[in-house]
Image (tube, rainbow over all chains, first blue to last red; front, top):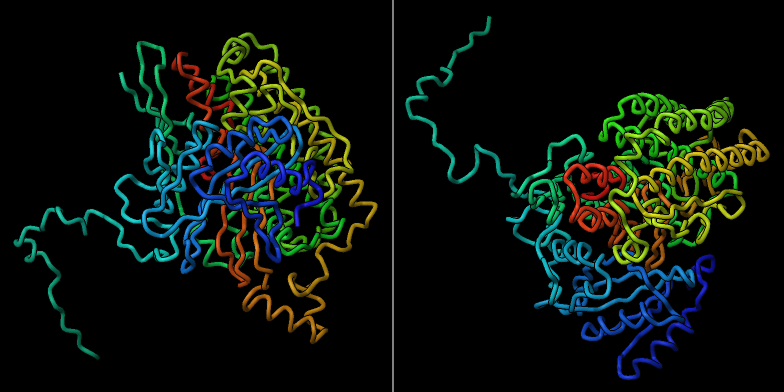
Length: 193
Length: 388
């Protein structure tokens, strides 16, 4: 059920246009009780071609990539999804493209060649989910520290409870001088009176 | 030479670090490094009910807390397929426009301060203070408002609130004149902003820029006009656009937006007046929305609903929704994936500053170091929102 207020280009027309241009690509319109924006599943290999077509076709003109994000559907298989939200300012329409990815070795080609703005969105998705964007010019962590281990937004990554590195618990910390024990507070006997 | 600008530099508006590769005074390469304020809000939202995430959103763009509240509520409402009553929507419009004024005031003050015009800062913060006291009046908090709820507002507006807003809105255009007297024809200001940090329309779209950054480049795209929410289609206002896409045009766009916001706020006040000083402020759909407190004390039904919503939240349908609003900084969007439980399976925030900041290298490469300060200022970024 697309949002009636924002649609200048119908989802049906969009689907038809995509199927005409890419007869071999297995598009699937997402259906569900409450899917509020038109969204299409497609395999990762074709994502660059489809995106370039959506951007350049005058009838669609999705010139702006609003954002890219990941979703982890653990324990479902395929586990991950990369979501691309596009905006056509000419036709005042939005569409979501979704690429499902298997758990082991999740990879998808980068769309930075189509929209340069994809750069940081893809880095963020990599940072959070460990999804690799093949061909990305600078695929490094963006919000988390470079030396961070793990993918925090995966569902099997716990919320909190990781030990935070301070001077007192870092492995190469300076051990206190044994003589300092002398300075430790002495046991005091308290008398009740 | 490689130079680190930030993370502790007053002109970076938070903790932004920009690695600059310089040849003398010329910037060869600029790389923004972000993440110093990352607090994992998207992860935390998965462990909270939809309503419990509202206070988190105040801390994203902390200069415009109510815009963030509004966007979360709209996304959840879109998922639930409900709509706030018209009176609540008018109050939302009124408050988010005041938020826009205060956010733009902070932007103008700090941007001018970065470039060396100190006076404007004090003037702007004087007006911002008035908006903060309006927040204070309506919800008891000056900065972290958390005033909007899914389906309406947390509580009704207090007596005398509309008069106070009206007084502020009536005074504001004169204050905007003051700012403009100080800057618009000031030769130093012109020299520091005209032709500086340019962004062509094509580049702006390719970089995904939204809000005043996009409109400064000459593209008339405002979600309040193009994809209206909260009944913005019933308000009369213009969308100011620039021509050259330089820092001066972005300044012009934002100052004009302050004036347009006062126009909208004025209409919103009239709307609320027409619908009554007190009245419907929340949807009466108790499956999703808390019943009013007075009813809870007298009706058993209401008490049950209250208890159920507080104890485990509401149950949205399985699906997903993305709602976007025109926040002071650009397109702010919330994306919810729901698995039918009271907690969102995924909350993704499309933060306008995060995307706009990407355009910084395009604006400054091949130009002077001093212009980097102007460029960062003219983008109007808030690091709380970038890092989330």
